[in-house]
Image (cartoon, rainbow, N blue to C red; front, side, top):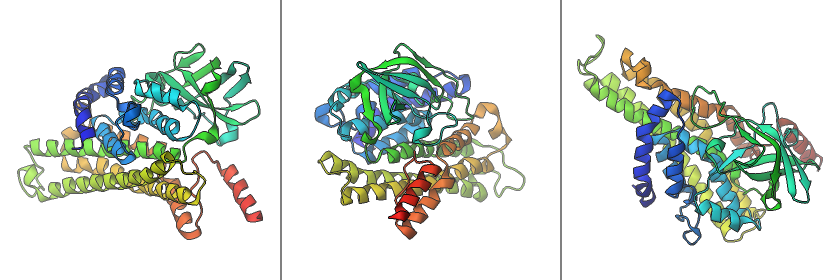
Length: 405
């Protein structure tokens, strides 16, 4: 266990102890989020001299996977915060020190970017009307993951000139309405519901151009979901092993009256373990490829330089490859685990179904169907990986412009 994992181990144990009760009762892990924040979880990527743990990206994701094993909701609800940290560390804005100080102090950042029915940067309905005091924000967002637990919310909007911007506002600011109305079949504690902004005042230093995002922001967003998926797999594997060991009765077709001695059931357990181990390795490989990009930007390298772009592309491609392989692996693992168990495994009180429900929900947030093509296009045609917010229309326009050159 790494020093970072050891530091958070007591908190992770408490989170794991409470996670099933939250799942059963529908209560929210407000206390656990606060415990993590107070323990410095939200600041682990900050340098030591700025109040953090000085962790690298791969180290962060090792910790996220462990957190996901304790409760798969937790990495996802911290997802917007973690991306915000990378932005404020490495996106180069003059206001960064203020936000870094808040992160170091344990303040938590949620996000409100997506809207129902919108597709592309120019399609969102949320507007920031600039004025002498900064701006006024109006609009409605969905999938506001983590915002019900947050002190601050980063909001994607268009200003009056239709320029994409990010506005950072207090979660308890006048005009902010947070609705805990997420009804997904899984990941039920992530707070991924609706947020309504009505005449919310935004300070001038809390408004950023969309282009000021860190170069690898999309990769962070995608890998956090994959870390949650691997956490699901690790938790499912542990519960499967425990359940098979405790089984006292086998089916008549079994190879041994004691289930744990049955080679057929051993093979199921072994396959589940192999799938989870492979998924974890793929995610950590991709996370490790982000470290050189972050290090280059931290040393002052130009994000547009050929070398930084090459490193960022390799990290992005690795994340796309991971999205294909990890999704397949964890969905299979959380399905076939029931083959090694009896009918009692499907009882509601066993809660084993939560692993598949959580895996399916995470996979639907991060659809694999779009990812393999991007990897193939890059390998065959040197096509740059798409940014997550580029719509099909925008992609077509860009490709037509490239073809005309």
